[in-house]
Image 1 (cartoon, rainbow, N blue to C red):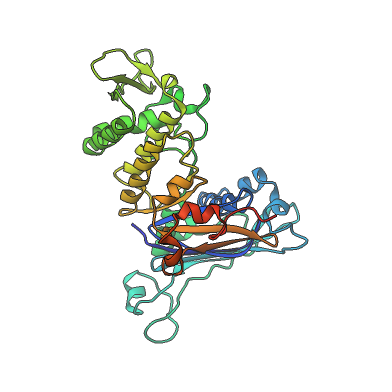
Image 2: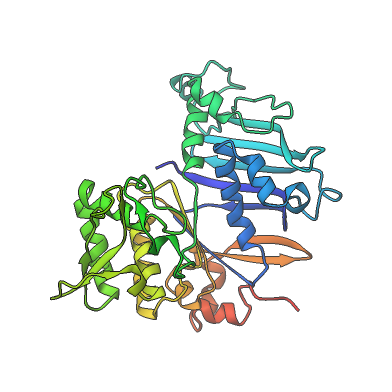
Length: 381
């Protein structure tokens, strides 16, 4: 697991300048329109950068005017800095004449609190500034590139670019909101679409099917966790369709019954919980799991299990959750919670401190302090 330290965002949507330290668990709370979604969307942008799809992302997102902080007349460029263990990535994006953003600077490399020998061990030929501890990074002259140069550097064997690219490629914001009749998770799915769980759970059946064969212990753990929340649930029946063995769909059965149910016969909350359990209990999680509003449609007992799953997953990866659930917040420590506010038109983020809240917590829960606006994270009228 690559240890994520922090991300700094400048000039992006409602964010003028914000640094978010990323720990094992980060629970984002805040009022509607405070900027939580903008914080999450920067990870989608990093994924688009890694995949060489920045221009496509800009087209879908409204271009530079919608992306830059209060538009390009007020903000001339945006910048992102990510620290991933010893690795660091920096980029600056500015508007082009056609309204898209282009790279004016891009720097993947190594941010050291290590000895210079670490750089030599990584196989780089660049020099190291200073003696002993230092900050070193390989600089790219972006020269107005439409897309990132990360892939090219990784192909040339640059170890920092290779690691950064791998982490960014795995960045996804999971939001299991769509449980409508036409949702992909309820439909027929390609059986080989199983490399990772998609953001909307649309390949849940083939992903579980693959786990049942390659990691049966993890699959069993997922099923047993679902049984804690869904009375009568026995197991999934995961198999190729007879009429087309390249396709499959989610089927399940109850205890002491051979009758096969389809995903359409699961409640919305049940289906979302199955997606969440699968995501958080998978054997090889990405370096960062990001979930938007996981509490949607969940019974209070399911929220308690969800919190335990997040805690368990945090021993193997980093988990960021954006939530409006007071109950979910109460199931975590103050240091896990980051309060997102919008002050004078700018999004801010502040991680809670246990010591500062000690006197309050002797009488009130975190959710009560949130409701009382002691923590912040409520609308300011």
